[in-house]
Length: 97
Image 1 (cartoon, rainbow, N blue to C red):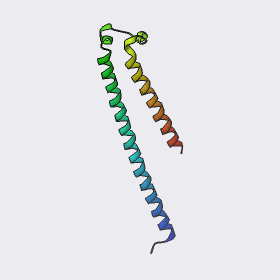
Image 2 (image 1 turned 60 degrees about the vertical axis):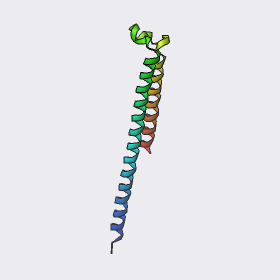
Image 3 (image 1 turned 180 degrees about the horizontal axis):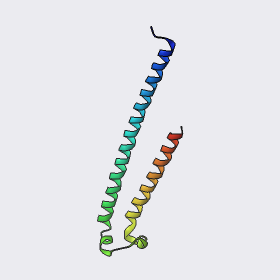
Image 4 (image 1 turned 90 degrees about the vertical axis):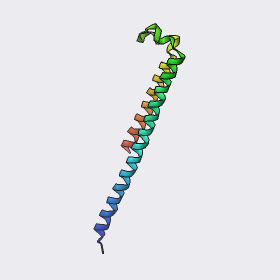
């Protein structure tokens, strides 16, 4: 027969194991989301290069990103920025809970 202290210790140990399992599944989920976003970003850049094929021929600099043919790159950058902000805010809130 176990004592009260032994049962509490086992309960805390099991709770810690469950929490580690949840953290692993969350990390796997965030890793999958990050991989999907990376693939999406690569696809957007690839297709924007196909659609706006003149951008490779013009040798543009960063100051000329407001040109007509750079819309796909700007869209990809904005999507990547917002995805990074959302992931950062979610992680920050989860960390402080």
